[in-house]
Image (tube, rainbow, N blue to C red; front, side):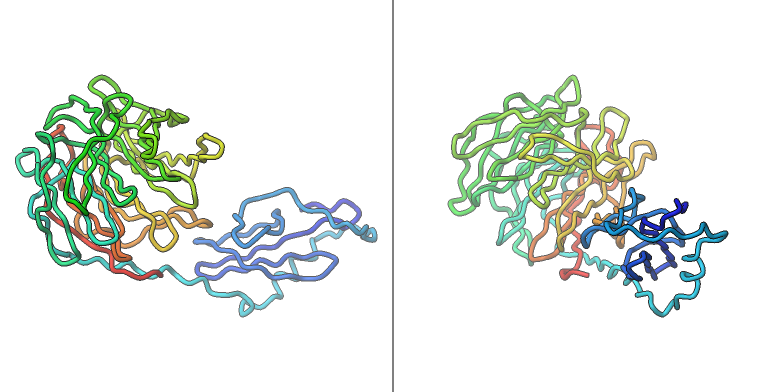
Length: 391
């Protein structure tokens, strides 16, 4: 940082080594140490003090000290370099590495499935619809109580692929999808009540769609993206179960099918997705108060990934890269300071990696082991669980 005759600006020195990090903020008022985080060695002399506990280590305009300071001669070498060099490394604090994720195989589903929907209630996980081995539609709805899977009921139709599902007020909403193994979209919304083991119908979608995502925010079911038989959609609609009405909200920034959707800190996240042969890595954040989307930290492009919130952080799991023609085993965790951080990958790479949190553990239920080539992908019965507990 240049000197301007009067030493009236705060000067910052950052010295970072892998797993160690210290910032010393130097001013006429004294020396203050703050802690930052970094994954690689770096040196910066043009930053300003952080504001709040979750600051991002990005350059900012320097702050002014209110009290005027005496004029100092311009030094040939900034004096804070010598001071920084003299500070002992022992003053730094180690940055703990995240606890490695531990995966384990649990009971398999009765029926293999992909392009399906999965939800969790307080007492069970439910797997609905999708396609099985050979691409046949799956009519049975299965329930997992933490020990084993059993057939709970059957669908009230002849089967569908790529629907979305959400739990609201103890009921399971099965929303849209494509008819059987075709690309003919549906607008029907069926509601299953586990307490009575009965089906009913809700108000249909404003327009047929499949390959969309759904999440509950503010007592309403938000449905994002997807496609019909002709094009990919950016539509964003919310369903109010009290009034049984759909409301059109701010559309996604782009048309995309097969995104992952999750709610965190009162906002809705749309993660990844695809249109035709193109995968997206965008992460878009919807603010319901402003009815507007903003951009979040991007990931590597993918579609059909799963997303959940666990231990106060968003996790993205699996999916498919069309460009690389492979299914993914990646597990990424969104750190508020460091961005997306890799965790231990899933033991089995899968697209349509339907993920839920049940009893404090992430469960990835079913999915296809091979890249998708049609609306009738061959499913698997594999269920893997990330051990409960937070790092």
